[in-house]
Image (tube, rainbow over all chains, first blue to last red; front, top):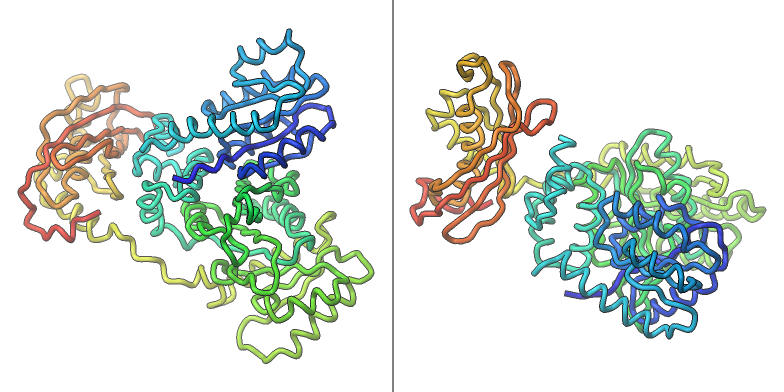
Length: 138
Length: 419
């Protein structure tokens, strides 16, 4: 089976600093992944609908100006929609004090400033293999 | 029905029959997961596609192609709004190119369908072309068939930004729309011989730009010079996708093409003979030859791979001393749906164990439906689950049953019985 990760790179909330999400999206594409990219300011319902219809393996949420504080709402909405097997990662500026709260609501991993791009893509590749194995048991 | 589909989804079993039911019920997550299976050519997807093929051919498939930057995605966004206003359920398959070097892709088309794409009546899926030529992805046709079976009224396929030879869409779509941006002069020349020839409807998008007049005129001239073809007269329309100007007229043109006798290639195609017909008639025969089913006035409704649906109207003969439907009558209905499904494989399947729970009391006059689903099967043993539902969708009884597959054939030829 061809495991080519399908990743949603998005931003929720009001912060428009999208350089980071663009850089990550381009890197994931160059790492051979299929990336659904959205501009900033996405509504949570729109992200859930998109993740479901595109059947993505991983959702990467970029947050540079406190948008990470609404990630728990996104996690709840994903759960309500039955999307419990999507791996959610958050990248950007997340104060250490807030990181545990994100992990507690089911975020798989937080990537802080300075994270090597290769580390992000390696993590997504590994997470996708797990997700796909569960979704399509041999 | 809706409730039944939800119950099926909740079990999240990989079984084809279960997924079929969820897809036919239009369950968004089940459709999306099946597309992934088809796209990645996962083994079970082939059985699913084969089973769904018989359902295809109802939706109107609209192909939208044109050079990069013509405004295809934005025009589709406007189309979605107009379709929604007309009360239609629409699926979009948007194809973006994969990198020829890394295989990666950024799928950005649906971003431009953001406004209309949020509606519940719309399902959008992005595909990467994965090196497939012709402006489509390899699995596009099977994915369109799946969306067709899922009950969408129309399926819009957006190709990769197209050049001269990307005409694969014509073989897939009922109606091909070629979108031309205004003022491209030489570029329009370049595509004249290629994709312009496959157009059923030509759209000059960005129609508010000054050069649009000239582009529209060039296209009309081209059509006039072309050898006359009988039947559908290609239409040239002007749209402004960002404002929606001209979009209602475009939908009218699509509808006209779809209903114009003999024009819709896909709609006109004779419906594929359902593969299950021979099996189904054999299963009906089992029921007709079953004295106990007749005694209880059971009715065979339909069958599919691994599944049989039967019905019973609760009559005075089915009641117990409390005036409610007798558990034995409900069991008989469930047991029959189970037994008939298990005997679809050409050998006698002998029931060896069942378990039933009765959740809700049933009254005279209720119409009960039992639907069996194959949970597992090997050469010797098969396991089925049956839900018995009342007319309002309430599950009144749940049944599981196990059969032993004997090697003894039915009197019929095994070939007739293969599902």
